[in-house]
Image (cartoon, rainbow, N blue to C red; front, top):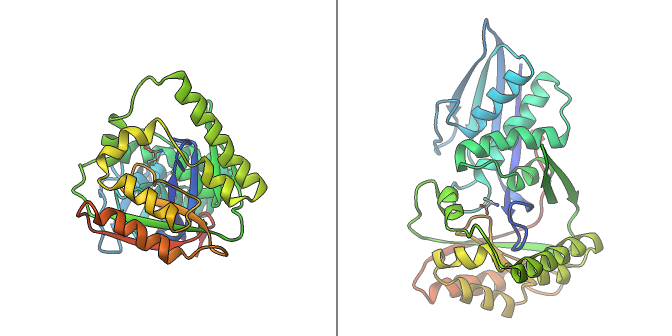
Length: 310
Ligand code: HSE
């Protein structure tokens, strides 16, 4: 028995929605092939099918941890093989680990006909994030499972709401070439404040509400207006030379909103392609990094669909 699944990259937070909001990117994607053979007991073997390596011990690999957790909970005693082809660069703020985890959860559901809901798959995908980034945050994995724009809430378990994007909404991702710490997401979470001022909370709730209202109304301007964060980006922007210029120049070229993509260092701009040229936005963002003598590289994409069999 064998299934092959692809899951998309994602951009988390959108400014004020730390650990709550994420967008699925149409590309790039990770691909996972899962196979199962009869066995006396559960085992999970990992094979890398492309050039990019992730840990090969199942308990240390995000996709491996997801498969183990699902197999244990559903009483599956098989020899499970995971073939991983990483299409999403690791550690750049595009939900690379989340995509592999989501593909693994989706693939297990397909392979063994488990009847899991989207929220169940998001819950198990979080087990992968726990392994790779030290915290089971669900924003990236929710976007990689469901596609579109997602809002996640965690009570005992996570649950997510998906919105379709406005039709003309276009995304520009620009990644600076920087020396990054090992276990980057864990590090960039460690620099965040533990307590915040009440006025910052009010500002973030207002901006987050604008983002959701924008998706509910299909209004790109409203989404962009809400992409302002006074808590997490204030702490993280020090790690991204050129942050202020990148934002300013992207807006000058017609971006509706700009923010750090996930835990960074990539930056995300959104725009209405019927009104502005995504290439100009991208060139301006690259110029913003250039002012700090930081090289960068970008691409244009749109909001994509979630995990699917290929
Ligand atoms: N919400 C998470 C963070 C996303 O910002 O740390 C990590 O990709």
